Length: 333
Ligand SMILES: Nc1nc2c(ncn2[C@@H]2O[C@H](COP(=O)(O)OP(=O)(O)OP(=O)(O)O)[C@@H](O)[C@H]2O)c(=O)[nH]1
Ligand SMILES: [Mg+2]
Image (cartoon, rainbow, N blue to C red; front, side, top):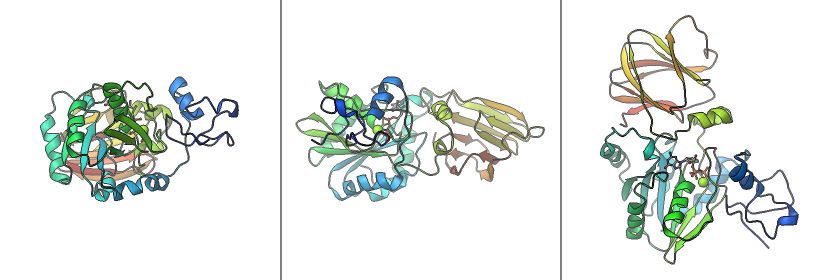
């Protein structure tokens, strides 16, 4: 009998204890979840999977050929290469911008929607959601019913975008079912397509998230991954820079600001930032660095870690681990 894990979608197997999908052969008939999901769900223990991005791309590739509604979920704090999915979708698609509970309340949310509307005109709708706070989930259901072609609606996005958490909220709000998908702050939690029946006319299909080589989460340890993951409303760190200054970003890296400027850093509240003088400290200078100019009213993005809004032209020297993507864009908020 072939069985699939209700937590991550992987095929259950009893032969390879160190491979994904393993369950103890004695329990095979009763269990509904693989050992990896069981330990993650009950003990918070995360086991790294060795699956590659091409493995995940292969799983979702046929979805692009179907004429079914797609929900593309994007985390505002880690958008990664959202163009990959955007460029492949030809069926109707709704953009869900997740974790909106983490945006400071003072931010004008209409401006965020406007930003994405101009850049990505193909989406039928753009909706800001918070699965944690149950914000706009009813609106998403209305729009699903408006645009879906058949019963099936696919949920796509990068790893950690919040796809499974969103589907769990749909399960909680609109079904009597208590079988929730496993979620976590670590990457690659969902490993295969998981089909969730919401009602006779609607089945949501969760998918494994795509990986992004430029995401800082690839280059830091689990404790730091946990620390930089944004979990609650961000208090932006505002700095008035008078002279060359170094900002030491926790145990992660260093941002030198080379000219007088006003900047706001949007980063997890759990990350400490030490402002020190430019000289007299060698910390992180061994990491790879890039020099980058950010124009007035633009952001500097350090993928997966933070974005920095600049109120005037600002010159940065950024030292980060690995091959993290560091780039500028028009200001998001
Ligand atoms: N604050 C906040 N956190 C959220 C929200 N939605 C998801 N998260 C968190 O984001 C992390 C990733 O969520 P998942 O639902 O596992 O992400 P995923 O897109 O399914 O990831 P993969 O299965 O790896 O593709 C978890 O720590 C969630 O608790 C939200 O609305 N608000
Ligand atoms: Mg998932």
